[in-house]
Image 1: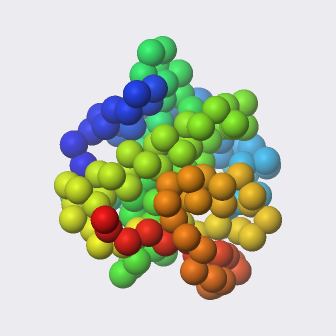
Image 2: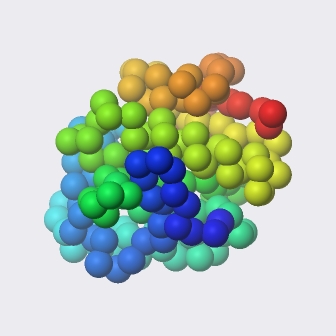
Length: 171
């Protein structure tokens, strides 16, 4: 993906090593991480290790896939992480993901970023379908998926969790 990718309010950019402290607000948050297959990081050092694994994961992905930093365009304030990648790291389904700091929930940033990723995925990457995998109780994430034109296809087991699969086909 040619990063940075910009929307009206946001920038999706490659991670940098110095993002660990800001990312800890996401990875260290029990409120965020209860919706993911990973427990919260204990401290910034653990988040730094996770960031290094995330950056290595992205480097191994085919062009256009990975996990990236999300920030406000106007101030470069770090908001969280977003990405497009093969489900469970192997596909064949492609997942859109968004994990933002709780302090910025409710501002439409996840929806704006996910829409940009879907547009890029369907356009530049010529993807035919993208999914979102969401814990059933995560109503905020389910709302984001719906606002992005994704429809509920049903339950499935991914990442060792019972999740709901939302999907959208290419236009």
